[in-house]
Image (cartoon, rainbow, N blue to C red; front, side, top):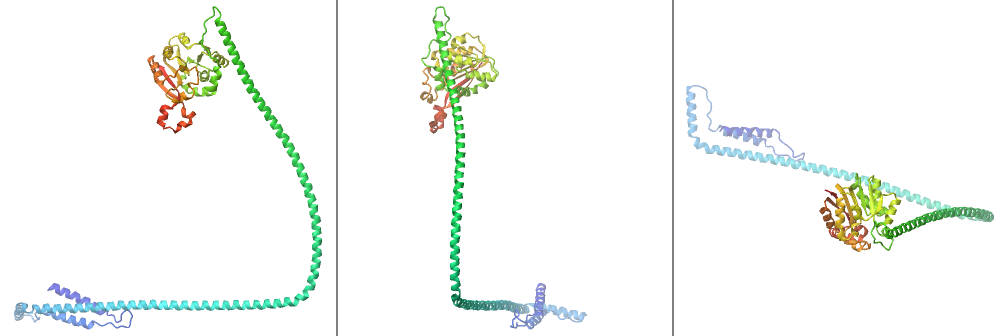
Length: 501
């Protein structure tokens, strides 16, 4: 009962607040909203009656009053089952009235919102009509201005036409008066024009004569300058010709000097051979076999110039750095000996060619003509600390190569270095190029065979270097696969380096 009474009190307060602020018009419109104040008051009175059901009227105090009040409360409690349905009906009726009041209030609020929207739309419509009226007025004003401008332009055109008509009339009136004076002025101007043409013709002839004179002077000056430059260029050509003649003369002198040197070498060799053939003469120190052609010129033509050979052998200089007694077997023209002299390494050479030895002597290089086997046998064991042998072993008979390796290894001291360079038979390109070009080649020496001979006679720490790739001299090999090219067309030469152990 207490919770129901509290809810009823809250509803009563809410309805009273709503009733104290009635809305008489919907959003400023002329529609009058219904006044719900009377309905609210009637609902409040009904709620009061509902609340008084089952209560006992208060009376003055006293024992009798207390007894009467107790009797009334007992009677109300006994009759509670009889009035319970009526109380519930009253409350439901009051709830229905509350719902009706709330629905009417919502209707009022909806009418207010509708009125507000109508007012807003009416304001927007009025604004649009006002803007349209302003645009219409501006358009009319602009149209009036354009009409005024067009009218003014038409009036201006009419005025111009009237002025032109007046001018044409004036010209027509004055043409007769001007014609006589114009013809007189035309005759005067014609005479002045002819006189001016005559003056211009005289000036043109004068300028033509002057330009011709200047042109002749310029041609004469250019001719003189051309003659001077031609003489100078002739002198320069003559000087260059004399310089070329001097260079050709120097080359011929060098060639003649070379030929005379070869003749002297051959003459000396012939005298040595003649002396050796006499009774009681010493045995020659070079092989008895000789070639029927100039091997020095052959080497120059097919092995390469001294500069090229020296550049190729420069890679061996670090291997002999710090050595004190180096032998070059087959020193040839002395390229390796020159490199050793530049590096400050004491070195000497032997060769079977008297011409090569004579050339080394001309360069001031220590070299002598000797058979390599006899020379190595004449050395003491361990006498050398370095041996260099380039392009020699392929000239030896195969059966004598082990003997040469044995003698060379025995003449090296401990940790002495030996370098042997020879054509690489693993590169098939040498058989198609220069190996068989040299008639003194016996047979190529494979790398593994030469390494076996060296290790057999106490040479260890072997290192193989492949020199002068075939693809550099035969560019068409670059089209082959890299692995195949390296296996069959690698270095044209190889060098094997080892140390005495």
